Image (cartoon, rainbow, N blue to C red; front, side, top):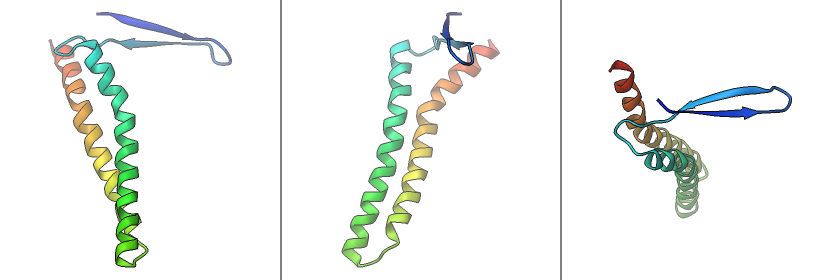
Length: 97
């Protein structure tokens, strides 16, 4: 098992340990997947709000941006869950072996 140790010096002086994901997935694939999570969350929320604002302007209403925000949050949560599920399964499979 490969471990990466990160030392944070300063006010709290702590040692963080991160285990690499090696079963069934390349390290670069896992890193790119984790990096894309943040962009996916932001994109889903922003697109939901923009679509809601566009529908508000088109229909003459004023609450569809809130519906778009809620739908964007739901899509973001589901997408993040879908992206991280293989990583969680790999970790559970590794622990059970």
